[in-house]
Length: 194
Image 1 (tube, helix red, strand yellow):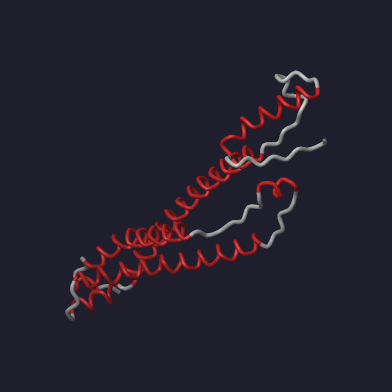
Image 2: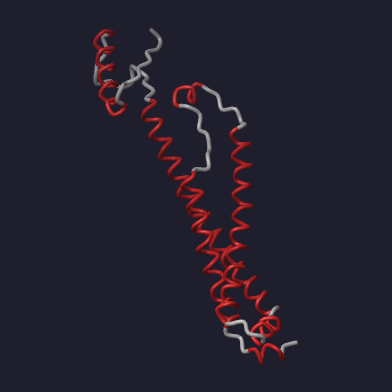
């Protein structure tokens, strides 16, 4: 025989099965059972564990990159919100002069920040879905993938929910300080702005 393919019912027993096969083949072929070089064994269970570890490392790395990206986006949104407050300082003064309360101004800018963040998130999620679609169109073939299965990227529901929650929090955090500044504007001072 040039090849023996074994599929254990329980993947946790693959090490014991490999050792048993090695001994049986060694005894039948007249080899030393302790010699590991006489027989080449490819363990797909070990390969799957290795691939799982590699993919876990990639997930952690991409999670860190995503976190830094979200942090930078939050800072950018906060800057845009500060500029928006500065540009609309006279409008805020007029609104407060005709009866708008500080809470109304605060909520207006927090909602604006959250909506801006979520709009960027929706565009990002759609972009990721397009990328995943095209990556899944790439044919993955070969004996290695025939044994362990071809990887297929997906956008899981748990990741999607996490992204939406994190984006909402970043939107609130990015908008809260500009919103507080806008809600504390003195109407008389704001109306004097050029």
